[in-house]
Length: 140
Image (cartoon, rainbow, N blue to C red; front, side):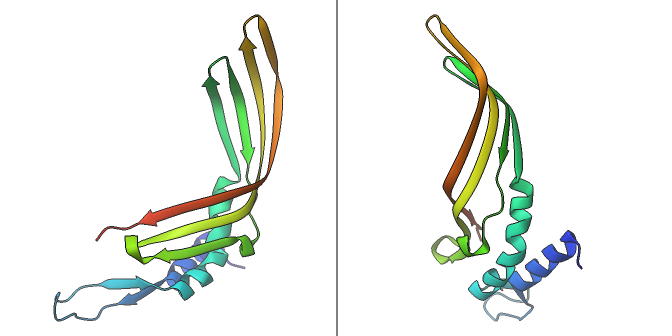
């Protein structure tokens, strides 16, 4: 029904409450506040947007002692909304994104050498449970 840009705009509107009140101590200006209720409403729109951008990560090469991983393709599907929380962190003037039960699948070509032994092949890694915790702080 609505495009992605419109949904993001709705999320931002749900997230922020604008105020153009004049504060006697600070003079005229513009301010906004974020409420936990706004975050809870915006979560339904923001979460698919975040994971749409994370769903397929490609890393060309990762070198380590004795070998490498090449053509790394990581897929991170969107978790259930019940496993995603967006919280206010008042002490740091920030917002925290916490995701539980996130899964990831990775496929990569590899090579590993130890002494005279050398192994090459394809690695398929399935991670069944990841916890993700990110925080964005805003300075004033």
